[in-house]
Image (cartoon, rainbow, N blue to C red; front, side):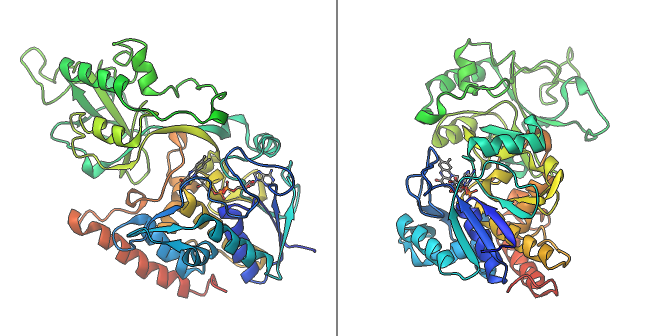
Length: 455
Ligand SMILES: Cc1cc2nc3c(=O)[nH]c(=O)nc-3n(C[C@H](O)[C@H](O)[C@H](O)COP(=O)(O)OP(=O)(O)OC[C@H]3O[C@@H](n4cnc5c(N)ncnc54)[C@H](O)[C@@H]3O)c2cc1C
């Protein structure tokens, strides 16, 4: 079959992109390597849109939860993943969980039956030199294609390992205890007036207790196929550093020198004393709503992280936009290499979608697949593209990965309210509802615009 768009990868994102294009009358070739004798280390079947781990799409609450809002928005945009999810749905309280086999079969049937889609079981090893293409090969992109991507983007622009430090919502940090200051008050042209780091001080006793808890805390194991991947410089888990000696952290990421605690002022230290140790947080998005814990990549289990990190002075009530982790994951430094339409700046006929763009999670990957399909359809028709407003969940996620995230610390991200333009004037208790109400209204307006985004 002749085709207009070539989609590589039949996971969550590739399947959703294929559906969006096909529904708009575009002929699609969908290349999926599973089923041709190839497999990824995590998949177990040949089915399209296989869920490799949990069977949950997380919260379905579209009033108080960002991923629930994303479900709502995807339903408004005729998402195949949401359609199939409804058919495959199993009871899970306020979450949306699915029977994974029914779900995958539904997605595959919808695409196989579609007259505009041809599914080809083949592994693609090179970025195509011409023709509209969507690469949706996911966190476990086949090696050969990954090499071809590296050749187009530069080695340092494609990561193979995800070393995530926890990210905290700024408005949950106790600024009566923590303070803002750059070490030695050093500034650059890009610096904030007050300083670039939020500093959380620790006494000797607090530090020693914290150090021991890091060593004792419950960790997740590397999967068998991840074990050969070495830690990269600067990505060593905090608990591994802790094991090297009691002072390793105090001379590393928890170094207190040059940081004057304004809450510990004496005659001798009129600007404040240096604490025994410090946990620093650095701004993670341009909105300034999310801050990452510097150097705190970890393999501690999620529950252990929340419990331990809330013992840090200033983070007693911390709300985490994401917790730390370390696992194999192929993803681009999208804020640098992609344009606002997910196109590779160096080869604009190629678009990326799904987790390889630096979003994280089934639903987010499908959402970026959905929007990439819409974009490609617009481009093919020679029409302008108006992105969804950044106040919507899909718009916020898209803005984040295509430019609003800090490129230096870019790590895959789930959708969360910290990515939305803040509503500081709304009381904290009512803020989530305010975000979702605004998003729904602005999505409706966007969908009604002459930009004919829905078939
Ligand atoms: C081990 C593991 C566990 C995870 N657990 C969860 C979880 O519990 N919940 C959650 O929300 N997210 C989880 N994720 C993240 C999850 O993988 C992604 O969110 C989601 O599957 C990504 O969707 P995607 O379409 O981008 O990639 P995928 O769903 O992985 O699809 C990519 C597809 O591309 C194919 N492919 C790769 N290279 C080629 C090539 N060269 N040619 C042709 N085809 C190719 C692959 O076979 C695959 O089918 C997990 C990820 C991993 C690796």
